[in-house]
Amino acid sequence: MAENAHRRLLYHAVLPHHYVFFRPVYERLAEDERLEWYWSANLLGWRLKKHVLDLFPVKGKKVSSLLSGARSYDMLLAPVYLKFDVAPRARLRVQVFHGVAITNCFLKADINDYDKFFMIGPYMVRRLVEKGFLREDDPRIEMIGMPKLDRLARGEIDTEAVREELELDPEVPVVLYAPSGTYSSITTNGLGAIERLQQMPINLLIKLHDTSLDFRRNKKDWLAQVKQRAGGQVRVVEGFDIVPYLAVADVMISDFSSAANEFLLRDRPLVFLATPEKYEINKERWDTEVWGQKTGVVVNSLDELEAAVEDALAQPERMSEIRRAAAADIFYQPGTATERAVDKIYHLLELETPVAAA
Image (tube, rainbow, N blue to C red):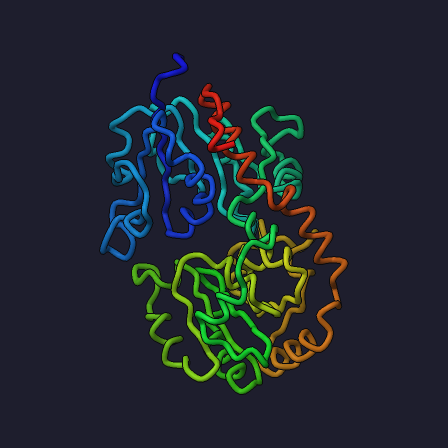
């Protein structure tokens, strides 16, 4: 392949936060004129209104997943396992993942549909090996980390600016409630949890998962339901990037979201709302053996929730040892993942990494 030849890259996103994961890497690559970008998304688009990538300032051509296969590409970058092949003529197929949730949704034989795996950390590799999907010495494994967390790990987020933007009371702590998507706590006792937390002397931030916002997947408008409970010291944050809110939270409440693991980098308390329905659906992959929900306190009632939050705020150092150990296992060298991903993409494309991107 000639050094000066253009390379075609296709990135496929199903939900908006799939792009947020990749954004730090793309921003380092965006100015390279040798790279020709294509962006694929499901045919119906985000909430039937627009192409998923219309939500972000990306360069290049946006296509539906059905039309993406009409071209050949030098590289397909996929943050999820695809239900059908969006790029059958791609020279290289790279699985970049988009998170590591307690449900371990990456534990599927589908990983072998790809030529390279940008692994988030040792835990992910170990679990895939234990399940027999990969060998430990598989040459397709690339230890990368999680690019979207680099600025959190490096302490680059202006937390004072985030607090001011949200008009948070500086005299009280911040509690973040971030349920996951399908069959999450927001569909069971989440609204009751919000109402109970409203009565506590805290700033409460509520960040819903992209899936909870998509009316094709839900019987209720959860965003509208949550907004009815906003006001006072309760804020509903509607962006697709949770990282700034992880940075300001003193305690996080979740269920089985990848964001709960991401919050481990803050070494702050976690509280998990029990979701037995989700466990039954996903019990073959649910992590009950390694870290799972052992990094926080699991609650089964609103009374337990209130007590757990009070205890977490009073003793934030409790469970620090297990949180730190889990973070080191789940995330490979936090703060430096973007550089590795950029270098590896150039290497795979057989291009020299420009100084501006290095």
